[in-house]
Picture 1: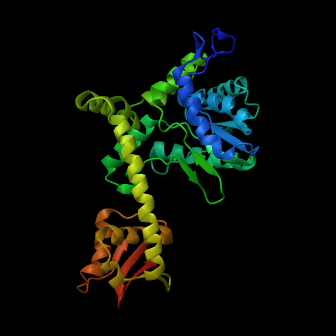
Picture 2 (picture 1 turned 90 degrees about the horizontal axis):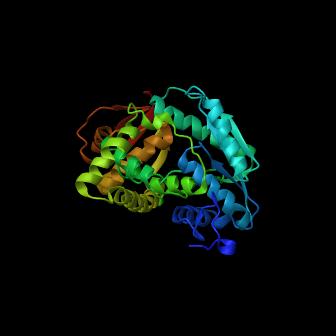
Length: 348
């Protein structure tokens, strides 16, 4: 813990008895580590600030660490226009950011659609707005305030969907998109209770989103009911264990992805109005690789996701070919053509 200069406590400074509050030290350290690759670059780092305790703690820590590391810190608050008074909440969050020393604290309105349900639609709109804000501010990275608890909830939701290893890998702590923008989650090893303690120790008053109490949303039900029951019945540490599982699955997923990329180069070729895969090569691969190749081909070529049962039916065109006809899939059709499994556009 860092002693306060002069050895006196300062209300709202985060120091008690001359030492820095542990919650502030933990969040600042996490942010400092995430910003280290940008040290002395003069880059702009954009904080996604909702005004809640997680993102407010993130913004405060970034405002503290940024100047020390030679980077510019800006913030953006996305107004989804889904609640009464949302614009006022966004403006208060921006004002809080300016109070923390973030001069460039802006708000943006996101147009929320209906695709995928309210949670997915709001998330898609939010990321689209964040991407636009990063573009206009020439940011090198966007910092997101997801915590270890958020990661645990994500893994549980993926388990409930039965959606495979990629979903179980949870949220990535660091991802670089196609144009080179880094999306960073510095707080994935930090508990939600720590960010709340950070705000209390810093004299910050976070906004409490009423949607976080609305049990119409699956994530809220996991947060308020499922995880507490698991912690009570199985003992403390369940959330941390789920987060560790995500990390391990992410490592496996990245290794698998490299293997798949190498394999696909040898067995996939373009076909008329679609793409073809060697049936013999598919059959020769283990099921985990074979099924993943099928899903990746359909996703990358036609922008569609296959269920497990659909994937297994396509795999049978290679492993158990008995003259069966074409298989209708989301966005395409799969059929056996000689020694190839051919995917062509056709069905939506």
